[in-house]
Image (cartoon, rainbow, N blue to C red):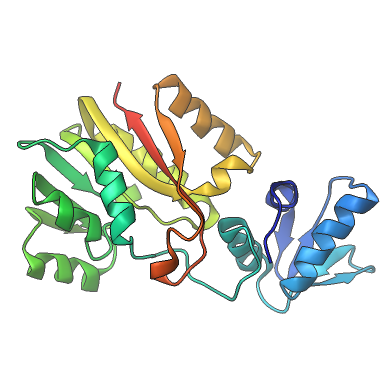
Length: 245
């Protein structure tokens, strides 16, 4: 079941509390019915006494899945999604990698992006999960592999390019991309796979990020629906390119 951007925008402004989702803004009848239809399909039921839609499990996780896929689907983990080869190819094309570039892939997973970038450049990886880091190290295409939470790594302005596919859940991609910009040398470039929810979330975090992209002369390119089908998810994504200052 596809969800319209109007309904996605309303859901992005809702508040969750355990099993409950509260629609604090005033909706007309047609808007409420459209939202209610989506939430019912996702397993929630309207509870008049609670003045909320009540999910059988965590409401925040359920709504986040709706926002990231733009449709009613089964439970999925959006913290770590393998990057399909065609998306990697498009991402690296936008990065305009050159021989001699030093490249960082933060939150590298098992290094699908780094593996291709290493054919041209010197690549360093940062990865939270030790098992994934060992996989990258064993493959031998990264100069260094650091096991760490990327957001806790102090920025070092030493890379010509940052290429990345950060986690999406709860707008973690914005935090990761914003932090990653501080690792770029002057005249460097960052390219990232990000959630399409940039198109309809109306909160301050999204507005500030879009303003940053515009201020730096960056661009956002929408990928076709199904770009992540090979990874077993309907999550909708964009490619974001941001130059260094």
